[in-house]
Length: 172
Image (cartoon, rainbow, N blue to C red; front, side, top):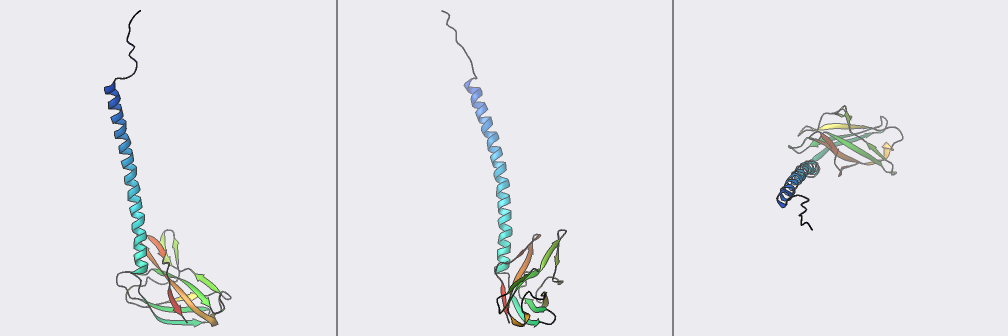
């Protein structure tokens, strides 16, 4: 009988080098993916935090005048921004009447990526008061019985426009 050694396969040194190489490539892929994920998450969290801060600590409105004109179907609210650091870009309004009818009026629109106020007003900056007029369609709410208006300030931060979740309440 012949005593032959059958050497099939790779040497342990080459196997070790290949394992180390695959590990380095895999680690590089995981680090690249993890870095992108971390940056995206931090960016989204930062924007959400800025909106939350703007709506809570940055919101100081003073209602200086309020009027209802049932014959012209208009509700007018004059407001002053009391915060020197934050400009309020626009508002959403929800009008309530005593009978329980509710109507929401959006105060902003994005057209071709540009912010435009549908209320026709410039941003509410410190300390100049401005009057915002809500044009109510006949039959939406009974303007002779308006009980309150919820005012939701809208901020634009880093190109993103968002209304606050908590309203400023105007009672009549």
